[in-house]
Image 1: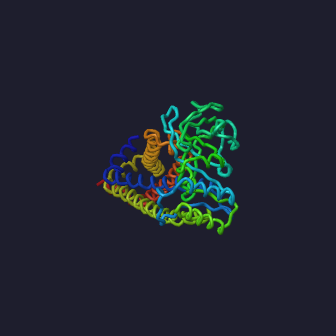
Image 2: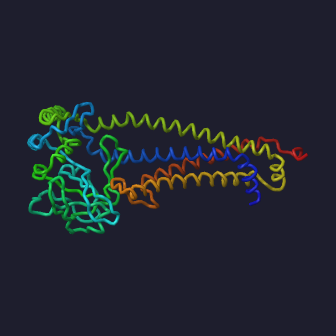
Image 3: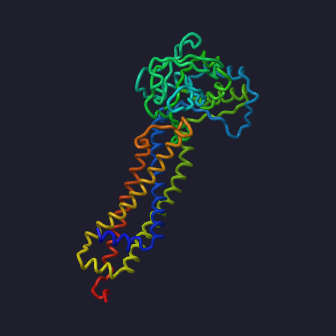
Length: 406
């Protein structure tokens, strides 16, 4: 213990500014590694989820960012014509997120209403922990609409319970019946950015059929066109629909295959990863050089004390243990800081009542966080081994003799 204290006070912390600089560099490297690993993991999950759309004949709409879109001139009769045209000529999946309602829940979250037709429901494959699948054969004017609810609403609204809400989509009150409970942290990845996710712990999924869409508000009908998915179609038919929508509403939509969406995403995502990898690599090199240089310089300045310790029983094996303990403590501290920042960020979503990012996790982290944190630990172990072994190799070259004591 005395020897370890000697190395901490006289060797490692001989120049505190260099030690704190090393800790700062290590934190930067760890955090960049963490967000990169988490992003790659999230992207992989997104690819697996959306891969079902990556088939010949499937096309996803996207409002042309360069078009002059005037939503104020659109009438409900215009969008109803478009949906009539869709129903007659296409198989399509439509889903609309983001409509907000108030509903009792222990987290006091605003609840997101998510509307989807049967084709969209088949594509998503939501995991249901309780209850049964959605039923789209109903009359909302007579029947309670069967819905799926997020995990965070399950205690207050169990299977079979009835929920009454004011629905802005139908411009009036509607009655819902809880048909099933979604699995914890059910999410949806973005078609155009698979690494981006919305979580549905505090959401209600409402099945919509042709009658529901016909009677719905202009907001739902317009928003439904934004990410509509044409199934088993052709590029020619997709272009025909694009032209028809523009004629009726003035909105210009592009239709791309999911593979084209992936390629567009990969173009900028890969470049971003290259930049982060380069910064991380440079940071790790600087960290390694600084750690080795600071330790060796401190040893040279304290060469007499270091020699005495060697003469009274300090072996290179013991020295290796001291180095691993020291760097292990520093690296562990940085990993804890990364964990704490991530957990606080996750907690922040609950504090500001941001339902689409509110997640349940272990010690504040979800699966992608833990995978990324394990990657960081693995990188740190490699760095630690490189540092210690490089230091020992250099230290063994330092001439140690009784002469330094004179």
